Image 1 (cartoon, helix red, strand yellow):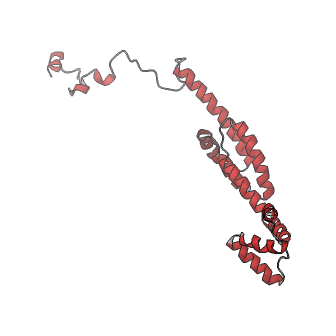
Image 2 (cartoon, helix red, strand yellow; image 1 turned 90 degrees about the vertical axis):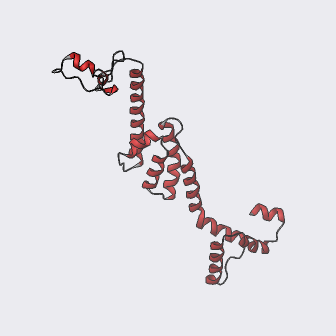
Image 3 (cartoon, one colour; image 1 turned 45 degrees about the horizontal axis):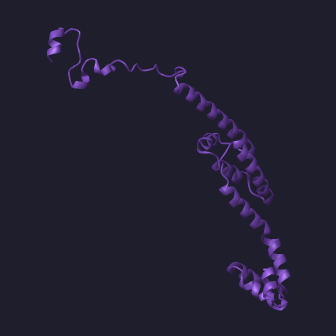
Length: 196
């Protein structure tokens, strides 16, 4: 606004009226209320500017940082995300944001698989969440590496079912069930069973 006044060469006595015309409806009401209460109001634009900055700066800073955190997502490793989030979280903590809001914003920015594992653990602080997210990322990477080894034929999966022999018939096809034939009964003669 100061630059605009300088460029437009506005007289100091007109600056306050012009500044009021750019205020939101709520701030215009507040401006009029202050004018009535003090019976003087603001004497000039710099006085109004100082009051507005003093009154709304923290709120503005908090909103700006919240927007930045809302778009902050983990695109690389969780440790890089932790470093970026820590910087923004410090700004928000100074502005008075609660730990729960920071925790929710942090978890929402994690990759889906890490977010799911971290969210299940019902954490209480941001620091705990950051540590658990790092642990979960490491565990998921190890599990992924094990899965790749098993997929390459390095051996059977521990605790899994035995591998299926694809060279022979499936167990249900042995007795002709798939073709609609009755099951083989050892008490029936082989010739009778083959006729059916």
